View 1: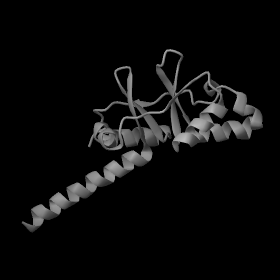
View 2: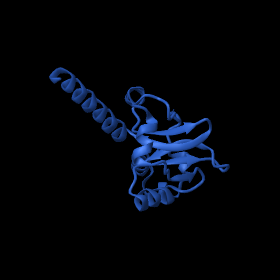
View 3: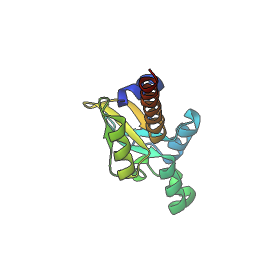
Length: 142
């Protein structure tokens, strides 16, 4: 199974936020959209990082309420780890586990085409294994 298969089911909609916005605005966007991560863009709209709920909580723990007025750029993890639509879900799961991230922006060239969570990837992998098991069972019983 490929990342494209996940996106075809869950959709390609991605909520973004510019790196100059405040953490308060980011927290409001996370809450309003009932999501756990935002793709952060530079002023030109180019995706540059991901901001997660965990990043917001870390900033609050370190800087208190004042952190809500800090910019998103101050809170994101420096590494921007991405995937492509044609990548195997297994490879994406390994990368997410190795890099200890729960969300990957999906880029086609430089264009943002989706976002995949570790939950999305695990669900897809389980479906893939279940389909393989059913095919084997059918083969054995026929």
